Length: 304
Image (tube, rainbow, N blue to C red):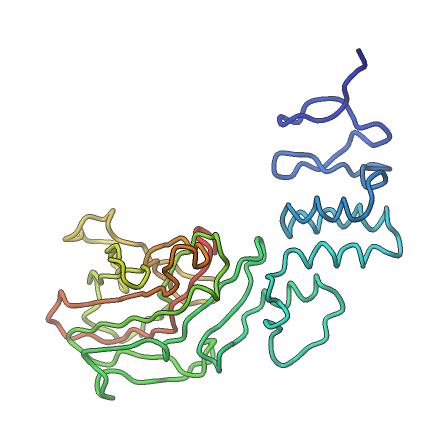
């Protein structure tokens, strides 16, 4: 019997013949960075297919070996890999103003930057790590009751917003807002979370430790009920169990976000294509003001 060479799932085993034993661990395996590699053995289309089953991050690491093994044709090789990470409808998603991308990789990362679609009603981008579609529904696309007149809500423009106009709560004792969209704009077969993205004015009242009922679900189905708090204090005991509160967090862009809930997008196979979100305050008779709503964001669950 001959001697076996290779690396098992625990990283043990012998070296691959003709390669260095020094490697870079990534995701439980080892990418060999020696003088030669398996890229020297397999045909281009085979390697391209293998890398396409990994992730954009793995593809960037593999590019080091690809460039060495394929020389002048490595750009065409990489284009075939990165095209598989792009959504099937990527040609219709090129961000305005129209740009000329030198490679599919450049196009991929171009789509990872936020840009407006549907006449500025939505912000769209790809998640860098996975290539999954993300969308933010503008505040202008939300419906608001218990306060449509200018004395309750106003539309404002601030530089930090992705949208031309966002909504600010001026003075109201109760309110309800919500919105919806077709899940075809999202990636199929993906778990998504919905978040309300907001800011608080320094001068605000009526919002401190106020539970706001939120929910997300498919049209025609009952939405699971969760609670958020726009302005949560840390020095008092809540009147509702702390475990029921969906925590707000500060984002890298300076805005706050609170998770509304999650859902699985089957891609229309279930027959429920319309997703709906609701944000309701009907528990407090006190007047309140000082929250600014940028929109509702949908992105793959547990990813920022």
